[in-house]
Length: 139
Image 1 (cartoon, rainbow, N blue to C red):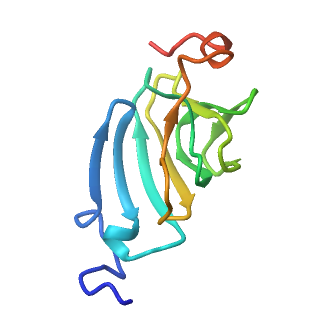
Image 2: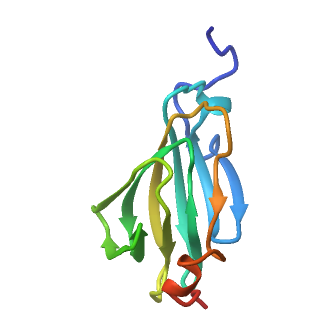
């Protein structure tokens, strides 16, 4: 079924902005914006010292593409410092977290699939072991 009010081209003005504790999210594609069923795209700007602590997406895979800045990225128990032009892949239901431990904002695209699903989008596990003890929270 065609989405009568959905966009095919999304400008910065039309992006849906959601302000979350770890930084503003500019939704560039999701089912209520573009009618997409299989893919969502959000641009995240994470200020210095902020983090999206350990969590998982039970129903989605995720690709994180770094546009600018740097971040400490965890996928499972593996940690890497990610920079512009680099990608992290997060399998469905894998615990992961993004920590900006640097002095400048980091900007990345989170590409999640599918866009439509049954179930919970995000489960915070940052206070569960072993994740709570793996790293100290960013200040």
